[in-house]
Image 1 (spheres, one colour):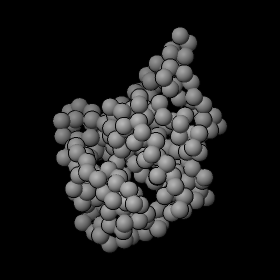
Image 2 (tube, one colour):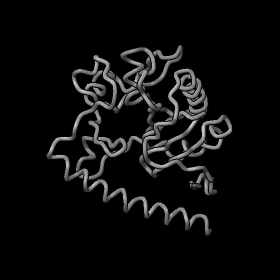
Image 3 (tube, helix red, strand yellow):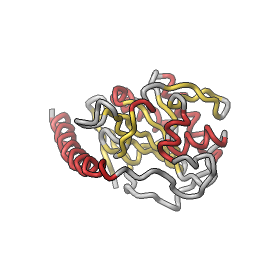
Image 4 (spheres, one colour):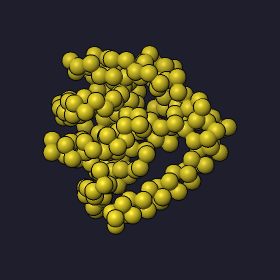
Length: 221
């Protein structure tokens, strides 16, 4: 299946993968290291700030390594850099890191020799929660956990991570985050937040339709 994204006003085609976890894709620490170092080199050259997130952050901070049972690389960048990030997709492609999934304003997924590398987009949450929360994927994360970043030594390089990383790790994985656990581990959104999650899904659906219409109009011009 072929997908398409508009980069600097021009269509860029890529081979799409489905929005599901694909168990036959490999997670190999050597490949993950190679991929992450290439990503860092390219994004640093273009002054695009990104941070380690989710399982990659947990492994880098707790284990000083990738988590053995992980299945992808998790990274994130701020929405203000979205256009700059899109502009380097062809350069990543030339280095073997190929866009394979894309959802406007939410996530960019790449594949490198069978390994998935995800870039979440850190956005201001929708009204009325934007004053306090960022949206990462479809989850709400308090701004205090993501407003600033600091370097962390990982793979012999200084990678940026959310400042005081233990706070966001505990928020995502709970108080037992120091104990390795195989499989997905995370916090469930409280009941009061669930109506907002439904509203967000509807909002993202409309936003995606509007963005696709804008891209088609740009191509026609």
